[in-house]
Length: 80
Image (cartoon, rainbow, N blue to C red; front, top):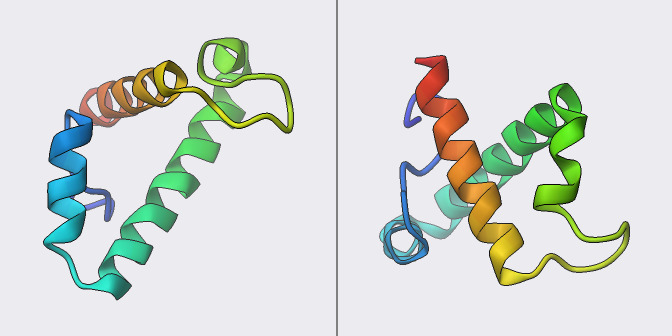
C-alpha cells in the first residue's frame, strides 16, 4: 500500500495517528491517492455502491466509511 502512496492503516485510530505523523503536503497527497484508488474500485465494482454509499449527494455515515476502509484494505492486499 505504501508503494501506491496510501497510508497502510487498518483502523480509524491508526489512520488518524499515521496521517498526523506526516507533513501537511504528504497528508494531502495520501488522501488524494486514497480517493483516486477508491473511485477506481467503485468504477470496476458498481454493484457494491449501496454497501458503501448513501443516496447520491448525501454524506456517508460512520458505518459506510468503516466498510469502505475495510474493503479498500482488502482490495489492496488482494492485489499484492
